[in-house]
Image (cartoon, rainbow, N blue to C red; front, side, top):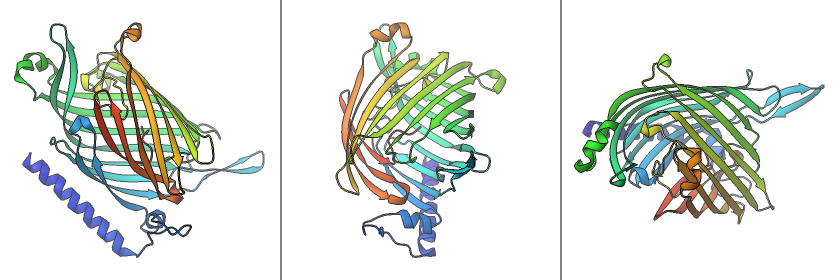
Amino acid sequence: MANSKKYVFLFFITLLEWSLLFAQKKPVSLKDSLDGKFDLSRYIIDANGFVPVPMIITEPAVGGFGGAIIPVFIKKKKPYEDSINGKLIKTPVAPDVTGGAAIYTVNNTWALAAFRAGTFVKSRIKYIIGGGYANVNMSFYKTFSQLGEKELKFNLSVIPFFLQGTKRIGFSHWYAGFKYLFLKTDVNYVGDTILYSMAKPLEQDRIVSQLGVTIELDNRDNIFTPDKGIRFHVDVNCSDNILGSDYDFWKVNYFVYGYKPISKKIIAGLRIDGRQAFNDPPFYLLPYIDMRGIPVARYQGNVDILSEIELRWDLKFRWSLMLYSGTGKAFDEWSKFDEADWVWSYGTGFRYLLAREFKLRVGIDVARGPGTWAYYIVFGSNWRK
């Protein structure tokens, strides 16, 4: 553990040196020419897109407090240019985002990662690639016939790799393609010794190799903090020994995010999200209710479905107030849908328009879930998958 802390510390120092190097290369303005307020738009553009993003980790499932630095390179892309019936049509393209991450929390969870999301404009192909290493300490909950629901604490050493590529369909906002997930996970029980005999079967050193297909509609006006538009996504994934996996299971993910202005200053958002697993996936990949105010993996099952609504009220040009609420269920079979309890959360927060030219807003959310409060540092939208 001492060596792991050293690696994270050295990564933090390296990122800080990068930040100083880019900052000294060229003096840049931190004020917007439009209103003279603090704004990083010109800094992002003049510093070749580099933004060192310090963050506070607030996820309750990994201790509720920690730190991260995420160096991000944002590069604007030229729009698609299509000739339709002799008329030139330009369609905006999301900027390329390249970054890394160094994370450490109070319960000794730590991770190093790198990622890139971009577009081959000429080929009309969007892609995402990422990988890293994570040492995660978190709890999972299992119901035993004689003891009821119990908290089981695990340490997970994870090597993940992810790749996704989707191609634009014609001149539309629809994309279709594939995705691949590789996980090498070493799971060890670190909780109460009284429950060890029950948790021992869950200890494992296994590989998940999963291939899937995906289809998506995305006509949002920007990828960071949308004001209008829809993102609809479905993917179907197979983990099989033919792919080198130790598990045979299927998993379906689907979600829709919708944004619509209901006045000049109020933006409404709706999220519907669900996942379902078939056969026998590892317990740490079971669907769970993923909402603000609810710890990750606290409510799991073979199926989960949830919905959230949120309102963003732009009080001033830069400042906004957030209100949101949601509910969801996790259960093992659709026939048991009525038996599962609805889990609710609600909260409020604020946003600041940090980079006007990218429509990037950042802020803090405070959420109330079942029996607990949580807070979140939000970079862009809270609804990100």
